[in-house]
Image 1: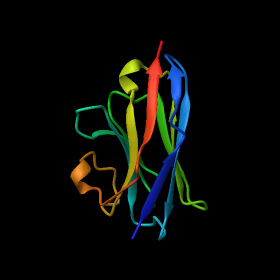
Image 2 (image 1 turned 135 degrees about the horizontal axis):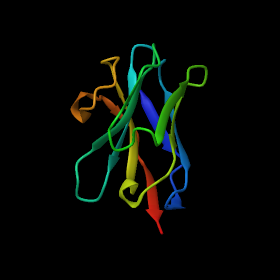
Image 3 (image 1 turned 180 degrees about the vertical axis):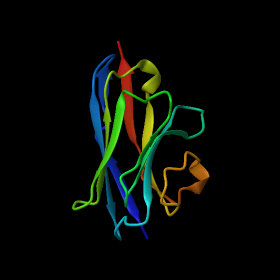
Length: 124
């Protein structure tokens, strides 16, 4: 069983930066890919970024490419999402999730384990 816990969400001004963290416990993430999804009120989970734990290969949605960076610290079993140049449309609850697919699939149904989410609010 994999347990994921996100942190780092808060309110920030337009153009500001945040770093979200996701700590995995229960087992090594070797062989998994870890992804970030956002969910705005009344909407479905939307893919943001993912990283293959083994290779470090990264995947991004077009809406965040060039602004967000996903990374992982293997020793700490922790994944990060550095978010720069934040926009109001980035406002959402952000979830980290793990998939045994070992590549950064953008489809939420392929992720088996989910964290509880952390709120990011971007305002003027």
